Image 1 (spheres, helix red, strand yellow):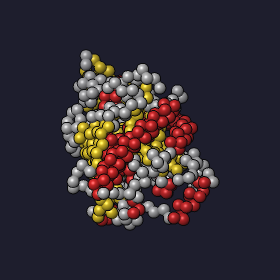
Image 2 (cartoon, chains in turn cyan, red):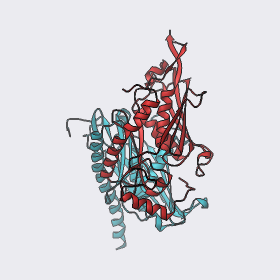
Image 3 (cartoon, helix red, strand yellow):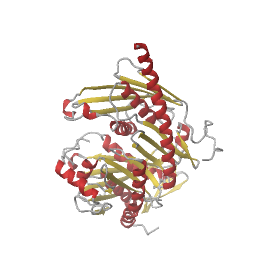
Amino acid sequence: MSTEFVRVDGRLPNQLRPIKMAVGVLDRADGSAYVEQGNTKVLVAVYGPRELHPKHQASPDSAIVRCRYHMAPFSTKERKTPVPSRREVELSKVIRDALSQAIFLENFPRTSIDIFIEVLEADGGTRCASINACSLALANAGIPLRDLVSSVAVGKYKGQIILDLNDEEDENAEADMPVAIMPNINKITLLQVNGVLTEDEFKQALDLAIKGCMEINRIQRETLRSVYSAIKGEEE
Amino acid sequence: MKTFKVVSQLVRSRMVDLLKKNSRIDGRGLLDYREIKVEKGFITRAAGSAQVSIGSTKVLAGVKVELGEPFPDMPDKGVLTVNAELVPLASPAFEPGPPDENAVELARIVDRALRETETVDLKKLCIKPGKKVFVVFVDIYVLDYDGNFIDASSLASIIALLNTRIRKFRIEEGELKYEDEYMPLPIKHTPVTITLAKSEDGPFIVDPNLEEELSLGNRISISIDELGRICGVQKLEGTLTVDEIFKAVSVAKTVAPKLIDIVVREGGLSVQ
């Protein structure tokens, strides 16, 4: 990969933005997390497993996951109306699909696990930051998981495959491609391509995305470990 | 999706066992579509329309072209919007009301492939930059649902766009003047979408029918244009490994020309 290519914010093609993660940031929710990737800021709350209303939606042999991805009106350049857009409806679905594979849903029949995502500031990669925050919040809620889902977007910008696009790059990219994986069981749980790529570019992009996800997974683990080892220390 | 259809364990396990031997429960080859039928110009009031059946899945797409305003960030381009309705007559699982997440996802998958390839040359649909452009509405109606409405909708949409005729126009001193003749929309590409499904340890199949969709657990849609470029991917339910995704892309690329042939033939294009 060329190291000459310098990005709008001075990063290298394969460099993530600075990341901040925290869990247990909300008191009322069963689990919560806050994630920053560059200027993108996402807050997530998990409620459940809890009794499901309306009851007819319940599944007799597993929990169901409900997920709402929502952008705050002040999160974007122009004010975004709080009414859910088609994009938000789609993202709620793909984020739910990306996470539900990781949850032992069969352990909680007849219940719902409700995930609420609020994008507080959007500067590219909001669905990926949301997924990262969601898996932390699920872990924080004590819900058993097969793996921590980790996510990052890659894209093609001025002919170069780059990692973790910010908004400016995203708007001018030839293609962007959000990816989420469960690293320990080596499974992809989210993959979208928005744009045009050749097969070779696609392969290169997916490989880069996996590397980025592994790095994010490491930070997620560190975040959880630092919180829970501190709690363990207090008990002793 | 709420599913009122139930696939029995017996059918499900037979399906999965057969797939391990590379055969399918309805006798199709792994990379065979069900029979595809196309009827064009079905709706005379629409500027263009196409009804596509894949097996007993039936989708009708209609195109309307109206005058409107451009998006502020693209003042010199016409507008393309894709909307999909899963109308309740198509399945006991579809309910009346505004488009649900499945309908929105469907519309956005079809929209993405058309938009990213710039299939419709929107620059040619600008009348007065920033003020007045043509707006192309593609409305997808899923009429009968037996699985794989994504591929059927993408076929119906591109064929309906190729079938569309608008009044020939010229711009005189910034004013729009119509002529008596009709002309096709400026179409540059012919993207198609291929949906693949896979059981945990079986091979990929294309065009899953409803029973297969409900049973196999892992599904992905890949859009490919006539140049063999990837112009949209959406992983649907389930999970896949990296190698499986590469495999899915190469399968989609081998299958795409068959669908593009149908688009070219039905769309009345001379072979490019």
